Amino acid sequence: MPANLTPDYKAAEARFREAVTTEEKIECLEEMMAVIPKHKGTEKLQADIKRRLAKLRHESEQTRGPGRHESAYRIEKMGAGTIALVGPPNCGKSTLLAALTHAQPAIGDYPFTTQVPMPGMMSYEDVQIQLVDLPPVTPDYLDPGLPGLLRRSEGVFLIADLASDDLLDDTEAVSERLRAARLVLVPSLPEVPEPRVDYRRTLIVANKSDAEGAAERLALLRELYPPEYHPMVVVSARTGQGLDALGQAAWALVGAIRVYGKPVGQKPDRDKPFTIRAGGTVEDFAAAVHRDLPARLKLARVWGPSARFPGQSVDRDHALQDGDVVELHT
Ligand SMILES: Nc1nc2c(ncn2[C@@H]2O[C@H](COP(=O)(O)OP(=O)(O)OP(=O)(O)O)[C@@H](O)[C@H]2O)c(=O)[nH]1
Ligand SMILES: [Mg+2]
Image (tube, rainbow, N blue to C red):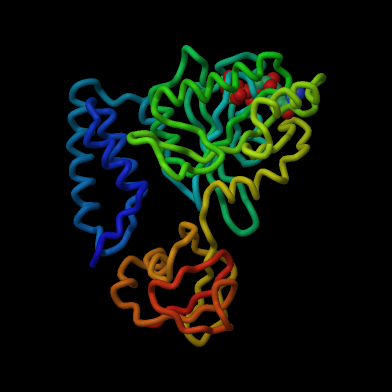
């Protein structure tokens, strides 16, 4: 069975081959594990990655003892995808996490309140999206674990502080610092990527719209990031203004589609969709239901946006769309 490795996987593998330190290697292998398509065709490869990971983790513990700080960045991915909250100190990342999820991060009116990442789950319609609050980024400070966490995320909210007169410099500094770590925040993925650079799709979230002078600063921010190129959402994490738009925006960044399973001869299970990458096929859906299913799959029937007519019979390569209902026949 072909492994069908994705560009994300191949990029992580290329970085692994160039990684020098044990920590870097661990980070790359973890990412390879996170993005590798999980089906029978990749089982050997998965086992191989796990074996190498175990060996490197062992080595790393022998030399420096288990680092609590570094392990804080190994957040288990949950939900349909992960969005990292990135920004300068005090822009309101933690307040946003608290407003959008049940997480209770420390919030302070001083910079560097957040020292380690904190995840939370945001509901959007019938899916859950993981948000991760992070320590701030400045020209002089980038936590070593942070780029890796961004690489394991599907998208980024770059948060700008409409209460700060330094917002343009501070926001640019975040992008620049990450660019120096070969991680480029972009409105959409480039057609011709630079070699050995990772790109993360990014939404600018202009926070503190309630603050005095916010409107004038927003006008400046829009000059730096023209709306025709840079999607931007204006919010106040404090008053809740604009937050409704963030669910939809996060879902768009995640780049996934929802597919509902339908047991043969029964009604579709509308309670809990499976989520697969946008552009995913019937085979990807089958793998998400159970890793043995793709090998046993004979045909499928589809209702919904990708079906030419309700109940259309399709093969495993049929591309699904958000909201499809699929009945798998083995
Ligand atoms: N007026 C206003 N204040 C806000 C808003 N969001 C956050 N704040 C305040 O901004 C300050 C910093 O908030 P945090 O959420 O701790 O900021 P942070 O980006 O997590 O800061 P670090 O963890 O230090 O990077 C706190 O005093 C918040 O109450 C907002 O929408 N409006
Ligand atoms: Mg914080």
